[in-house]
Length: 231
Image 1 (cartoon, rainbow, N blue to C red):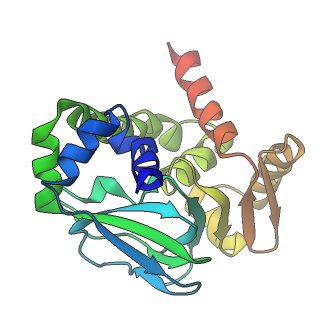
Image 2: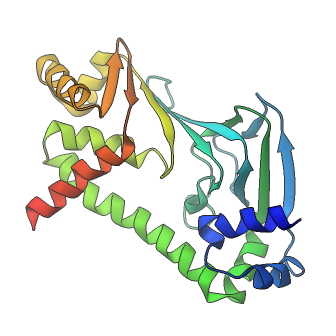
């Protein structure tokens, strides 16, 4: 049990609360612990997000696919992290992706109603959640400028960062190149030149129909540098 509390205290949304306080809360809030085997589906795209799900052990693969299956973005998430917590509340409360266990994986989940009680019990939890959703909202706002008027590298960076989570690894975008040219509204030569430049700097790798992210933090740095240059 001690190890479980230690893991819980390291979860970003539960971070900053003492072990004793967490034990007190555990007696009032229902924490459900689930186990998934390799290959089992944890979340299906379009499923209602009625629980906050934390990865306590193992790893999952989260995949977003557009309606006609022309674009697919996948990422690996490992503990400790919550699965798309920003979809728990708001106008859109359905998961945007399929989530499958890559190996035996432990999940802890809290119902939406119980998590609301948790937020009311301790302001540290509330601040953690507000910081999370604020960061996501700010990322969307600051990314709109490079998406519409920035250079191609900034637009690629924003597109990938917006569709993945902090802590995501092994990020891969699968799409036909001609569809990507259309998506970004550029010619093939410009697109390939940009990918080559990013590959040479160990930011991405790419091949026929796929782009793999070597460094997500580097993509975020590209966006941050754009914001600084505008100030």
